[in-house]
Length: 151
Image 1 (cartoon, rainbow, N blue to C red):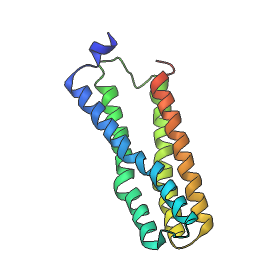
Image 2: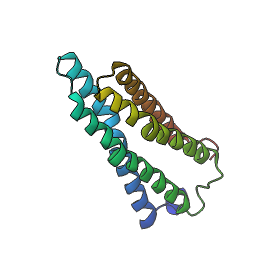
Image 3: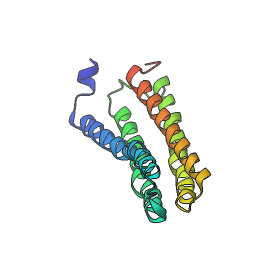
Image 4: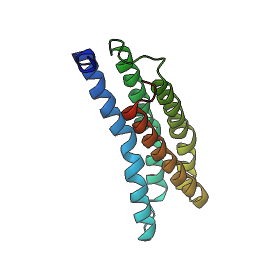
């Protein structure tokens, strides 16, 4: 019954868009910390221009992709023929985690990335910490969506 209820074109389209948006939203959270650490270790910091480009990408590409991922996820719940309900615990947990992610991506990372690009080492450390928080939130979101507590 579960497969039949969510196996239609609209649901699958939203699922595809949901997955693509997640990839676009979270790829930099895994790639940029590695690039930045390698640049620092090699004695070639990325410099202010690259730091500002990273910050601008959070605001213009990755953040909006995170918003889109949530919107497509909501659409999937709505299109699931009552298999998934907004009142289910796992959906509420997903909402909470999504709002926390939005807070990190739009509220904490851009400001710290800007300060880090200006040479503030403490801001660079905070950016690394906030990126780690984003990783943990993504892991919790994946656990929530795989095991669906309260479904």
